[in-house]
Each structure stands twice: as C-alpha cells, then as structure tokens.
Image (cartoon, rainbow over all chains, first blue to last red; front, side, top):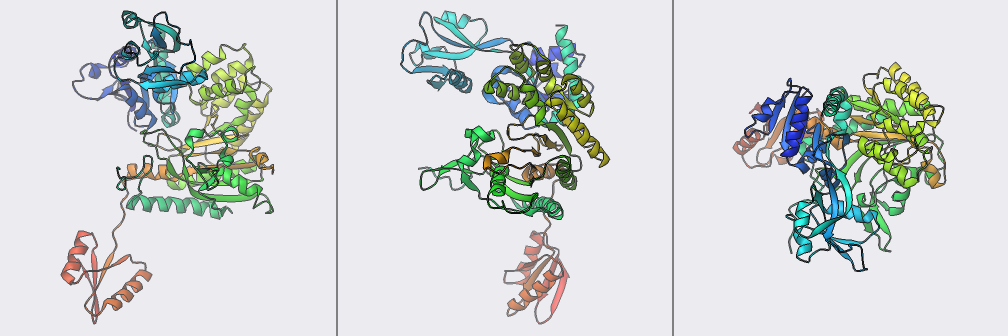
Length: 211
Length: 396
C-alpha cells in the first residue's frame, strides 16, 4: 500500500502544520530540506507530504490522490465539500468579514448593493442566507480598492488585524464566518485506511492540546 | 462565432477501445449475476419530467439536474438516477404484476457537477430494485447480490452499512426545524465535527444530542454497534442498531466479515431511505462506487405504498480503477484474410468460416499481398490467410 499522503497548503499553514507534526513526533527533516521537490517523505516512511496551493489541496483530496489535506476553512467554504472535515487544527485563525466605508450603513436604502470579493461563492451564500439580493463582482487583487474606486458598496474578505481596512477608510460591518486551518480526509481513504488515519488524528489532537 | 465541433462539453468524455471492452465485460458480469438471480431488465427514458425528481421530495439539488423544456414549455430533466423512474414504473405500468418485483437496469445517468472538478457528468450505472418486499431477507438478498457483483470485479471491495433510522430517530427528538435538522445531517455526512458541535451546543443537552455528537465518529468494525448502543437508549435508533447487528451476523455467516464495515453516520442526501443504507468502496477510487438502501415510503408518493430495496453501481468508476491498476489492453485480431484478385468473395466466406471457429479475423482491404503483410505487421496481427485458388495461412 502506498504511504498515507497528506497535501499541505504552501506558506504559513505549511509551517504551522509541520510544527504540529513535529510536536506529534513525526520527523519532518525532508520538508525543511525540500529544495524544489513537491512530494516529501515524513516520519518513518509510512506517510508523505505534498505541497500545493490551497484550492488544489481540496482537488487532490476530493479526487483521492491525497488521503488527507490541511487547508483553511476559507478555501473549504469557497471551493468544496465532498470530503470529511475531521479536525480544527487551531492555527491560521482569522475571519471572513463584510466591510465597507467607515460610518456608512451598508444595509441602508433600497438600491441594489454591489459587493466585491475574491470569494464570490462565500459572498453569494452569505447574502442568500439573508434572503438578500446583491450583485457580486469578482476581484483578484486588493479587494479594498473596489469601494474606494466606487465600484462596490462593500467587500467580503479575510480579515486578520483590520489594519489594511483602517488605513483605507474601511471598517468591518459584520463577521461572515470564523476561520482556521482544518484537517480534511478523502471519503474512501477514511473507510479503507481508517486505522492509520485515526491514529494520526489522535496524535495530532494530542499535540494540539500541548500547544 | 466560435465552433466547438472538435471538442466535447465539460463533464462528458469519449470512451475508447480498451476501456469499452472492459466496460462491456463489467456490464456483462453484473447483468449475468442479476439475471441468474431472477431479475428482469427495464429501460426507462433518458429524459423525464422534472416533477419526478422534485427536489423537495427526493433530495436532489435543483442545480445538479440537467434541464430542458418540452414543446409545451414543461420542464424536463435528463435522468439523474434510476430508482425514481423504476418506482414510477412499479406504481403504474407494472402495477398488476405479482410481488415482489425484481428489476435491473444498466443506464446512463446525468448530474451537473460544478465545473473543473474532474468528475463525470455522464455515468453508467447498473443496479437492481427489489420492490414489494420488506424485511431482513430482502435486505440480505440485496447486500449479497452487491457483494457477489463486486467480488466478480474487484475482490478488494468493502461494503459499509448504516441505517437511516438512527439519524431520523435521534433527530426527531431535537427541538429544531427541518432546516436545522438538514444542517445537522449535512455536518454528520461531511464528518464535520467542528460545525456539528457548534450547532448542537445551541440545543439543550439531552442523550439524543450527545449521541448525534458522536455519530460521525461511529464507523469501523462491529465494535461501533456496541459503542452506539450505549448512546441510544430505548428509541427508534436502538431498534435500528439491533437490526444492523442481526444483519451483520447473517453477513458473517456468508463469509463476508472481512468485507463489511459500519458507518452509522451514513446519512445520505437522498432522504427517501428508511432502513438499511450501504455504500461500497474499492482501492484507488476516491468516492463510493456503489450505493443503495431500503426506501419503504418512496412508493407512497406514487400512490402505491410498498417496501423496496435497491442499489446502483458506477460501472465507469470501477472500469477506471481497473484500467489504472492493471493497464488492460485490447487484443489485436488473430488473423488477417487477404483475397487475391478475383477471390474477394471467397476470402469473405473463408473469413466467415474462421470466425465461426472462434478466431478474431479482419478482412484485408488492400490491393497486394505485400501491403497486407505490412498492414498485419503494423497492427500486431500475427497470422495472414492468403485466399487464391487455394487457401494458405502463414505466420507474419
């Protein structure tokens, strides 16, 4: 049987995950010395780590080429659901928030509101739950620009400290969802390799508690 | 205007050569097993009225259905599932036949998946429905058939069992509305422990809440039944557990203990299931390849109440996994038959004789024997029959 394969979101989540794996007693030397390699053995060889972009972690796990993945709740909300979400890893905490120009009531008036976001699915779902019609515009870069330029009444984006918002005359109007890194598992892997996966989850739970 | 004549729509694909051969073999394996068990084939239309798959009754999401309209403007869908059309048949045209009805099918189903996620929108499903029979014997028959069909294809399969009564029993004790119940069901289905806890924390703590909290973790071997029993006292859920225990013992008697597991958090989207539910997995496929269960109240909706059980197998998913693991190749013909000038018809008749002996033959359509030889070499055919006044067969 091939090693248990875990996809990690490159960047900060990768570092936090590696720290957690090491705390759980899984050797990650190869990840530290990865060079340009993208598939890296960890621990005693019964597991390997794959590095990829956040949305791809979901794709690899959904299609079963990776058994597990570590990805932000933001990406899960935007991109997919056909896998098991088994653990809140506790790091990468931030939130999705609706923000708009300071001192302006976003909900005032009957005119249709325009909302810019890098996360159109999350935005649409949020307003659909409110039974509210809005026009969603997808923006790829700095979303804060859209209300400043007059394209949008508000934005839905990830907020950590709120500094960028403040410096651009924007403020949080409402929290859409609290976010953190999650451990996800492919549906079939969960059934066919249950023991191995549960052991790993238990070790990670243990390591998380000692954080 | 841009022409798309050279490509296929997203989610659709061509199935070629070896894969067709393999697929045909798998279909025949399943069909043979079903026919030998007394099942009779039905073919329902590829296009049906939207009303048959009405999301509020069937659990299909509106956006998952391929829709169009008929010439009166009524909404039609491309069949997303075969169970509902067969339930319709059983309640209408086959109403007068003696019960139970044993029916099987082998059809394309269509689901509009979100873009670019690599899933097929068109899938070949082969399955059975046993209508008009309730209880343990019927469930055993369905499960045994599923296991025999899988055994014929991928001996490393696993079937997991759940029971719709567990979630239904526990959730009806909760002070939540249908929407809240659906949200809880989704969290359990996705094994989303965090979201489930958040929802259940807002409800007064009762034994049912505690049991639901643990439900997504209750999967694995028969020990989960014992664990679950401690959680569900004296309710509909505990009846379901006893039933599963009983079923499991019977499946063990059939020598299937290595292939059977439990997932008590198996709470399928199709909310027409009422009793045992099951899914099967095979190595190398990221999703279940077979799913089914008991749906005793579905036929009420068609005005002909009767218990029923059935399952569907995704033939293409099994074929894909076998192709990946084994790299199956399509054998070349065994014999090329070349007719010399004036012997064209004699060559055809000779080919027919050889075919009747079971040899796979191809008719050479080229002018000279040299060309026939070259063609045989390039297509991997090892024998050449030259039909002149006399017939001779040579190795190439």
